Amino acid sequence: MNETHASPDQAVFWHRNLPPADAEAIGEHTIEAASERVSGRLAHGDAMWGSCYESLLRELDARLRQELARLGGHYAHIRGESIDSKHDMHTDQGWLHGRFDYVIYKKP
Image (cartoon, rainbow, N blue to C red; front, side, top):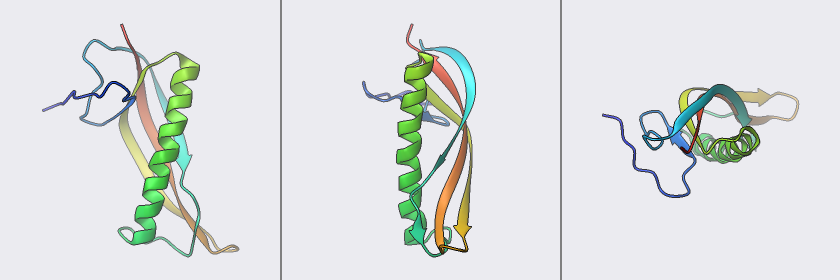
């Protein structure tokens, strides 16, 4: 079952959470975002992973809102995602990198 329970200021919708039914799709896009860097390596499910995941989602939200403004949209519906952990051996820093496929919608 797909859900549409949008708050008035909600712009980003994930997977089965859909934008308002009367919104019109105006294009499909892909965007990349990265989390903040932390010391050490990331392991899926550990505290540093969680912190980086939250940072990645904040960065993604900010980037999507910029793209919506630039492209004349009101909503972004994330349809696919790929998230990988990265590590820089020279600085011993880790971070998450995400690639997200989404559809832009505009209000009628």
